Image 1 (cartoon, one colour):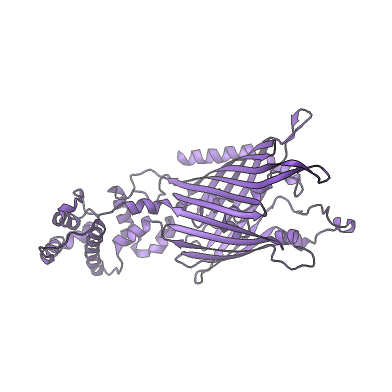
Image 2 (cartoon, one colour; image 1 turned 180 degrees about the vertical axis):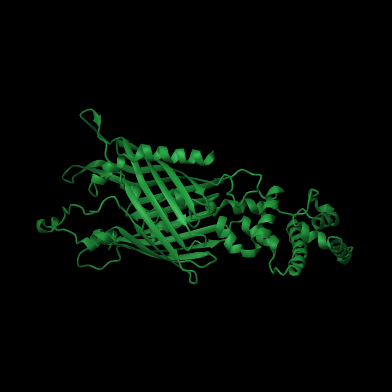
Length: 495
């Protein structure tokens, strides 16, 4: 039923907005409004050359390019972005992701299947304050401001272990002096990834929609202009034995000729055609990522040929078209910074800050395993006022039952009568250490040199991914560890 609803929503969006594609295809470059929709709104996107619709790695800002890039890793992520774009021009955004329900591989068999990803964002572009002047450039006194703004409401759903589809709704508002305009647009995207995430592919239709209120009227009617529609395809490949990922984005696939009318060039240069190979590369953006397996940091270098061809100055060297950036993850916080050059005399700086709200919530919780050992330790330190419910069944039943009679007595006998009462944190660590000893003994008997209990918590944090990816990475231990995960959810130890 839920899958049917998702298909209906996507079908309605396609049915309502796709008729505008024919109009978008006939428009020449530079003939649409709201060009700020094509700007990168995060340091990650800036470092990737301004566009990327294929990389799904838990970075919530990537969903601004393709809503299908929302995933389990974007749950409860708050991201703030700011950029000094050009002199006096600033742009920024704020995004928050929220996932409701768990995918098939994460849920307990008795729970409903609801792998839904949701995010909302606010983006703005402030052009600063400008002075009034007439058509000859003479200042007439006074000043005014101009700004663009949009709200991005994104939803994605996982369809099996490899596919994700997404849609976003974008109300767009512009305020220039006393003039204003309003439009409604949508993005529709899809994403595919292999089980080990070495290959990813994304496809998106961006800025599908209409301007509902124009900046001015013409013969008592609204003068409506077209939106910058963009059909994009992206691929990314990550090497298995090297921390390198290559990606390529093909943009504006609906229109071959991306040339502008060169009004600032000599007459003999204005009608000059662009060679086919140059035009072909103007549709592409290339990027190289250095990302270790730990994913604690990344370095990115990109090249946007269209930007270099249009913004580079003749007979002058510059880095127009190139972008570079990096990011560092420290516990629950990730920071990013990127630099790109549009013209020789101007650099664009972008900074991002992402906070994992899940980590803040987990930090406030103390997870104490409901096992016989844990209950025995509580009896020893009852003055600490820590209580655990009596378990209906041990979480790791086989492991605990083999030596549950001997280990608690050993623990009790070896503790001195006069022992300082530990803090809650010290107590929790001590209990978990004792539980781990029990698990390791049982695991050694079964010749499985892993800590199954610890691996289960690692799975819950999302380190091993979902579906087939998780099965492949856990290998022969998948069934044992997944059973522990399901039991933790059933006992409501994970919230």
